[in-house]
Every structure is written in C-alpha cells, then in structure tokens.
Length: 312
Length: 300
Image 1 (cartoon, chains in turn brown, green):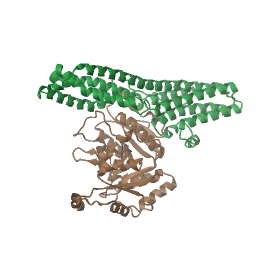
Image 2 (image 1 turned 135 degrees about the vertical axis):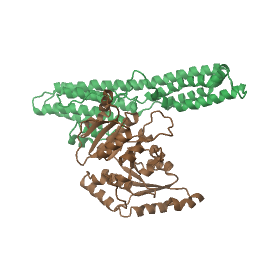
Image 3 (image 1 turned 90 degrees about the horizontal axis):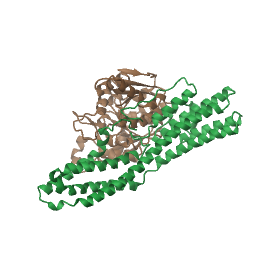
Image 4 (image 1 turned 30 degrees about the vertical axis):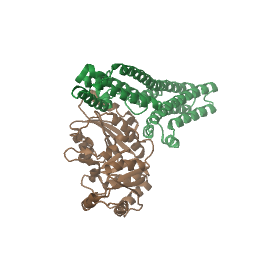
C-alpha cells in the first residue's frame, strides 16, 4: 500500500474514488467535482495494482484536477480489488465509494461478479455509481432534485434517511418514487406474499404512513409496472440529479451478484445504500446551521430501524 | 487523446462487435441457404456491389475528413490558448509598471485569473463544475462573484478586463500597453467562442445518418456478391470487408466531438496543467504542480 498527500480533516465528507483508469472513471470525474462543490470533501483516489513505477505515475496523473482540491490523497492498494477497497473504505471511515460501471469489452458476462455489488456488501459504505447516463447527465448544475425509491418491502429506511439528509444538505427537493405492479389475476393471488400495495393511492398512503413523523412530507410519484423498467423513466421525468436505492433494490443474484438493470439504466447517478450505513449524513452535520437543523428535523420523525455496528 | 504508438484492439472491438456478430450470422445463413438449401438465385453479380462500395468509400472518406477537421481545429484552438496565456502573463508582468505592491498584486492577479480561465474553459466545455478546482487558484471573494455568472470563463475574462482597466485608470498602464493587453483578452474571447461553436454545433445529421444506413445496406448485400466465388467461406470474407467499412464509419463518429469527455477529446487537462506550470513559474510561485503523464496510453 502506498499513499501520497494525506490531508483529511475532521468533519469532512470522505469520498473514496476507486479507479482502474477506465474511460468511465475519467467521465465520473465530473460527478466527483459536483459532489466536491456541494460538500467540504476529502477525496481519496484509489487504485488496486502492482507496485510498479508506471502504475504510480498513472495514479499521480489520473484526475489531475483533484490536485487543486483543498483535501485529497492518492493511494495504491494491492490484492483483490473488492477486498482491498472494502477494507480500506471501512478502516478509513469513508462516507461514499465512487465506482462507475466499467465496460471494456462490451461482451455479455453472465458469470461476472460485479465489483460494485461486492464493494456495497463488503465495505458497508454507500456506493455512487452510474452507467448509461454518464455521458448525458448534467454535472455542472447544483443538485436540485434528489429521488429515492421506496418499494414497501424495505427492511429499514436507511436509504430514505440518506436521501432526505442529502437533499436537506444541498437544498434540493426530495421526491419519493414508487412502482406498483400491474394488477392482474396473478398479482392478486401474489399480493399477500408481495406485501406490496396494488394501487397508486394505497402506495402513496403507505409511504406517507412510513414518513408520518416528518415535518415536511416529500412529493410522492407513483407509477405502474416493474421497477427495473419504470424507475429510470421516473428518474428522468422528475429530472432527478441523484437517485438513492437500498442495497436490495440495487443488487440481484446470490452467487454472481450484479447491479440491477434499473441502476445501469438510470439517467442520473445512483447512490446504493447498505442498511448498515444509516447514520451517514446525520453524523456528519457539516452543513450550515439552517441546513443541519432541517436535516435533524427531517430525520428525527422518520420511521427507521437502528443502524448496525458497522455504521459510521 | 490516444498517445499509444498502436491502437489497442479493446478500443475498437466494443464499438463494432455487435454489428459484426449480427453480420456474421446473417452471412452464414445466406451461405448455408446457398450451399445446402440450393437457393442459387441468392447469388448476384459483384459489379453493383463494387460500385456501391466505391461510392460509400468516398462518402465515408469525406465524412471522416470533416470530422477530423473539427478535431484538428479544436486542437489548434487549444494550441492557440497556450500561446495567448503565455503572452498575457508576459504582458501582465512586463507592461504593468510595478511601482508599488498594488501593481505587483495586479500582475499576480491577472496571471492567477488566466490560470483560472483555462481551467474554467475546460470545465465549461466538458460540462463539469469548475468551482472545486478554482478554489485552488482564486480567493473566496472572487469565487463568490463568479457564482453569479452562468458562463464562468467569460466572467473571468470580464474580471481580467476590469483589472486591466483599473490599472489604466490609475496610471500604471499607458494607452498603448492597455490596448495590447486588451487585444490578447479579445483573442482569448475568440478562442472560447470558437470552442463553444464546435461544442454546440454538431456535424450535420445527414453526415451521421446516411453513412451508417448505407454501410449497413452495403454489408447486407456483400455476401450475395461473394457466394459464387467463396461458397461456405463467404461469412469470413464478407465479415472482414464489412469490418473495414464499419471501422471507417466509427472513426468519424469518434472524432467529430472533440469536447465530449471521451478518449478522443483534445487533451485539455494536460494542456491546462502545462499552462499552469508555465504561468506559476513566471510569477515565481512556490507551488508548481507536476506534469501530467499519460494514463493507460491516454492523455486527458
């Protein structure tokens, strides 16, 4: 493990930018710059690779823009990428891991294990990711709309908390998105098992119930269909700058874990939140007094389960 | 910008493999129907295909040439920006009379603003938020002032003009020297405008649509002309020729947008860093950033 220019300070929003110097990582720099403008941020650019001179040189030259950021460092790790990055993210108490989707060959990889899904599970840290929308998304403007997906099957409301506190911190509007299944005979039979509302009105009511203690209820958008198909469309329609999903909403598969289609089709970046990261923004109240107060007000009334031991 | 001495195969393959795979299966089906299905009518003379191929070749060459013109113009403009930046720094340091600390501050501020301008222009063209970077170059007050403007590089030029004008009004610049600096600022405005023109004006859509359509049509006809001579080997010969046309089509598409956050971009990050190194050394700055090396054979 080698490192350069360490300058992390207290109460900074700590971001770990995992890169293998791909085109996607280069494009994702714009997303990191957008975050850096919204937060007092410490960014660590991390690469997993051998201790070679060329690798060190590439690491120093990648994301050269960050040299002007008030607080940043670069680190080379060794070993398996997921393990090395996850261990580093945990030990460094990072708030966010930036890991855009990489597509080098373009060939289907049915047995591929997603690095992002592995990081999400092993690091217990929210993962910022994006695929299709990386080229089109507008990273120049400030965050205006933060969307969060609620499907009624949440084990906890960690991702909703994160979305609310993020929105309050950056002064953006919060939109809750939900998708109810198409109603047909099978769905009616499956309903008790799914524990999902089957109409827009019921879904909206259920979400308001869940957020009952909130001082200001967010706008709820409901549509019919399947989340994989509808969620990207809803995010585009409400012009979301960022979409929050829970770990179960963003990953699928047991043996070969992959990010879901909705994540890779999203027009805006997605932050996938593991259940163990529930105190993320709340503990790092680095905003101005008004925004911080609003964050606490929003969160205090929220219906949530408590964080696991790994929460930051 | 790719600076490898060879083009890695992995850069080409993702762009063409879907079309090539589909064509290979199509070619194979045609060959099988011809050889095993006895559908001899599928074979056609090679003459019309040759003529069509030649016409498409000319069309593709023209399109690639137009795309290359845009790419090269972008590179030329950024080469010009390097020169104008050094010129402006030299003018600021030699033409403004340093009779006081304040004059030295103006000199230094103009150089800082010029560094900030190059960073802001790059971010402007790449659709990137410039403020985190500018915070390492400019003070908070100037940053707060810049946030009022949508076009940040243009606002920085305005600020430079205001500073120069102030120096003129205070008698630290005579009218001839003032005009010389103002002329350099005008050139910088022109560079920005030209870059914005390339960024905001795509190649006519006809240049994009018809080559793709014609190449696809040509690739579908190609195996029919090869059947008689190649028989079951048609898919190999046809796919190989199709590859050449598809690659030609994709080259033009790649380089027509030199400010699109791709590996074919003008290496603006590297150029802005080079400008910054030069300018910081001009003002004897204690902090001079390191040069940027290629990353995986690419300069960004």
